[in-house]
Length: 317
Image (cartoon, rainbow, N blue to C red; front, side, top):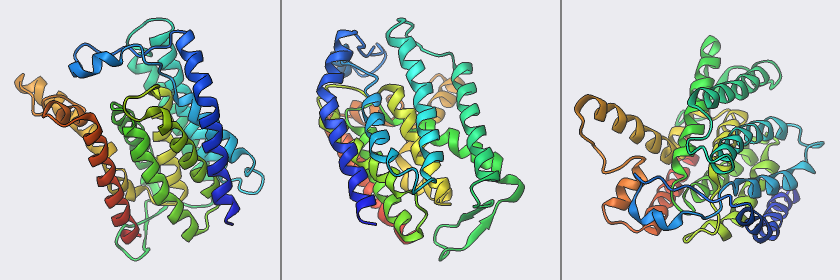
């Protein structure tokens, strides 16, 4: 059992670490530089030209770390499918933005269609092949199950799309999405070991790959993950939660994702109605930046909040 925890993490870490410098150079050569929105914080303008699409790097690490375990742990497959599926949508979005110089990437309709398709395939698998039924664990209930029945699929769509887009909004500061998601993955590892669900090799590969990626992604970042990375991480988090039957724990452990996406919804809705803003800027990490917090402080505080909430998540389990 120990080797199926340590080895995927170590393989993913070293693959990501070793491939990193070469891939960053390659992205530089192809001029895969990040466009920085003019309406974003002024301090971010200096990041313009930093290579993006770095999510490819940790996705290679995750694949290398977990592929070897697929025959013994077939439940890795749906998690990999959703992670790579959303990663592919993000890759197309980044590619159009960066290579074809269309600043907005995929249209919202194209992006949503892709996301709905991946979610529908995952929902079909969960209902027909996962053997988990439509039961999910209730937090703080001592392991009691909530039977969702006919609501299972609509709830799954809502939770998947909400989580994936929350992860996408969280990726706006150096190392933020990587740090928060690493902590969520550590929580998942503990739960997977307690429950004995057989998805732990892919979770550990994600931890290793993200630790390797953070060597290049902490402030000042040498590479950004882009939508390739952030959508993939959202896909990983939500598919793992479903495989562990703990989607109701996501508002606790992935609280930062939800705060990020909620801050955008609140800001846009309020602005449309009143032409005034609640936050200095949305997503909310920019609000703290514009309130005078250094980028590194925002990342540290959001990570600490996630770590504490993951401990609360363990109590809830």
